Image (tube, rainbow, N blue to C red):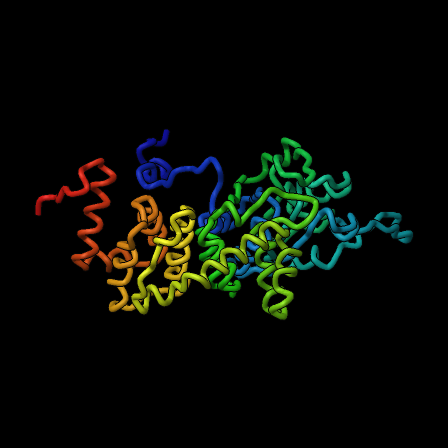
Length: 374
């Protein structure tokens, strides 16, 4: 009998990361899916429409160095998946004429991606998918031992029509959920060439604008914002608003342009690099403006990267702006966690340390004039 104390699982108990019941962000899920597939276990990733399941499949295939076969079950004829049987009269048998992708998956290690596996497809589609996952074959054509299978489907609560998988099929997958995560999407977007205006907007509002409830028409999602970025790159300026609305919906488009108008008005670059003071006195009737201002300035820092050392006092000067409440300052500093080592560099400034001590005092309910002992 083996000693449980020597079990590989037991040795990892203290090092294991927690399971997240609401799912995993894109970059959290990448290594999990890759490791599971490399172990020879098929994977099912569920997530909202447009959340990035197909992008994840391409990324994992690239990481594993495997050619990708993308099979969208709801858009394929069953014959394109499972092939067609034809009679061999000389031998008195039925022979399977397999699609090209099947032969490729048999001859070399291949990444087989079955998208929309829980869509309301026909029984012929389901039977083909069942054999691919359970037996790693199509008819008599057995896949190469190095071929892997990743499936994807929508969540039950989405407007997209889904059907339950059989227990036998579901039990052959390792199940993961890809959740909407703005920070993960932003990290990807900055390397994928997404339009800086869209990156700034998503960075300022987070998941609430990155993904909206699925609708019959356009709605915001990671995929549709990427579409909007591609449309922007080819559009004339006067067409931009309409093109973005066509991708993400009118409401999301109008909110984006309102954000861009605010950024143009406050000019974060002048505040941070030029030390220009901000006057909030005339904005007393607009309490939301301070929050929008802080978001716009913070997003500029995150989007444009490392601030020069000589600009760091301007950050403190901005946070000292009269009318900028402690809640807005906390909001700004939380956003700075995505700005690399900026907070570490700010701590080297005496004026920042004094401000941080005041904010800590406020959070503890101390008198505003209280000074911590040195």
